[in-house]
Amino acid sequence: MKYPKLRELKEAIISLFSKPYTSSYPKGDFKPFAGYRGKPVVDEDNCVGCETCANVCPPNAITYIDDAETGIRTITRDYGQCIFCGQCEEHCITGKGVKLSDEIFDLACTDRSQVVEKQERELLICDNCNAIITTKDHMKFIHEKLGPLAYSSILNLNMLNERLKLAGTGDTEVKVRDELKRKDSFSVLCPNCNRQLQLKTLE
Image (cartoon, rainbow, N blue to C red; front, side):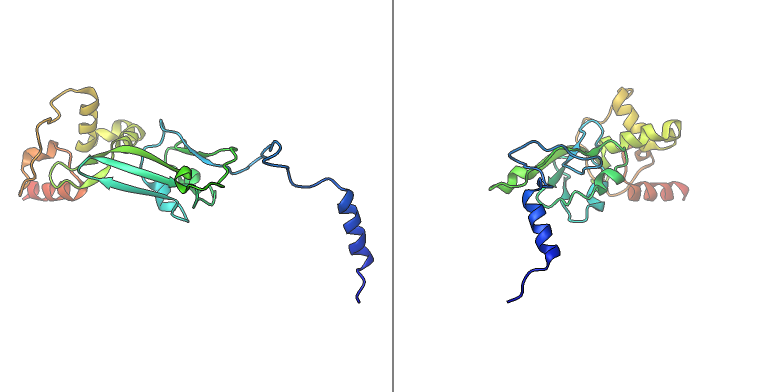
């Protein structure tokens, strides 16, 4: 029979009468330390739905679905898959859209839907081919970021017109056309349709 080493026996006795290093959560209070990475919290006023966080999320805990018919982008955040790495916060284009809080997020539950959050953003859709460009909030953010430079783009002018209501915004139903016209340069067009229009204008 091998006897324990005296050093190990000493450590066992000291540990027996020492205070625990871990907290008594959830029975007691837990005070997060500096830099604690808790539940990512979305700021609805600053999240533009640009899908950047979904692209950099390592476990694919953030996904999105675009519905061109309803014009809505649905962003799903599954905290059951989240590894709390902080990539969503680091790469957020607004710098305020999502922040890792010091909130303790208990993932122990019997229903996984309890740890899933969803948010919706209105899409900006091409008037010609119905392609999805981005979200309207994203385009407004770009417009504000560029300042006066944004007015060089017809797309940004359309966004400004929609906000200020300077002219009709085309409330009538938009029909997909076989061929772009010169007047379509003042419509909301995706990059592909805008390129086709510019090439045709130069002919």
